[in-house]
Each structure stands twice: as C-alpha cells, then as structure tokens.
Length: 231
Image (cartoon, rainbow, N blue to C red; front, side, top):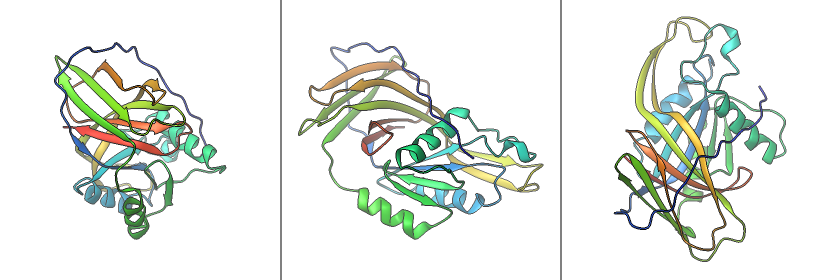
C-alpha cells in the first residue's frame, strides 16, 4: 500500500487587474478512500457529513492500490496514491492506509474515527497568516494571496476540482453489491506554482466549470496555510 509522489507545474501569468472576491474558507480534510476497500464505506459516510459542515473543505481522493483485488475504483488516480505516500514519507512512516483522513495537512487519522477528526478540525481552525481571494474570469481562475506576517519559508499553490456527488454501484471486490454515494470526489489536483510568501501573489490559471479549491501548503506536504473555495 505504498506509493510515491509526483507534482505537475502549470503555466502561470500575472494578472494586473481582476474582479476578486472573498470566498468561503475552511479547514481542508482529505479522505483517502477506495471503492474496493471494505473498511471505507463508514468513512465515506462521514465525508458526506463533512461536505456539508461550515468551515470545512472536505475532499475525497480515491487511491488505486486496492484495484488488484477485483474492482477498479472508477475515481482512482495514481497521483492521489502518490500524494498520500508523500504525507507518510514526511511523517517518517512506511505504510499508508485506507481509509485515512488528513486534516489541515498535519493531523493523520486512520480508520473511521469521527471524534478524532472533529478534534483535529477544531485544532486547525482560527485565523492564519495567509489570506486568499478567488474569482472566475472568462474561464480562468484568478488567485490572489497575501501573508501577514511574511512566511518564513515558501509554499506551493494548488488547484483542486471535484464532483459534488456520485452514486456508484460496485459489482465486484470486497464491496460487491453495494451502492455507495461518494461526496466531494476529487477529479483534479494540480500544483500551479511556488510562492515565497513575502510579496503578495497574483496569478491566473485555466480552470473548468464546477467547484474549485485553492490550497496554499508548506512543502512536505506539510501544514496547509490557507484554503478557499469558489463554487
């Protein structure tokens, strides 16, 4: 259940003027799950609750390392497995698990432990040093970030897109016969640039329709410094 990380940089351009708007901000909860994992449905149900919780940006990343047991996850991407492996490497661990929730880029919760997840969310809440503003203009996403005080080390800027909900009938594998409603299913997670965190950041990048989340995260991956969502 161990994989490695990759990240892909996209082309950026500076935007001199754009109609920027504050959007909802929140604590990022990443769920690493699989349609082929018999332990995952309770955590998928918890994700459905977190997706509706104010102040939380819940994101489900489907991994591919359970596909060999009889059912290929319809949402799985190798890059999501690599991201989970990178978290394990940063924490000095050799194994990765499903289900697993990572809160704020720091707290790691294995299995379905709602109370532990809620405690981690509460610990991660509060004002941070980075403020984000997002806007869509002509099919592009305009991102602006400011850090006060300036960051001591740089961060990566990431753009995430997801499906609000999808019902999947699972025909084979450990969950054969189940129909599972998945929420906030990540379809794309891309690193769009590096930011020193001293001068204000302003950039634009291509983005499709649907909800979009921007995450500013310390390298590692480590602590998520800010996250904002534009629906």
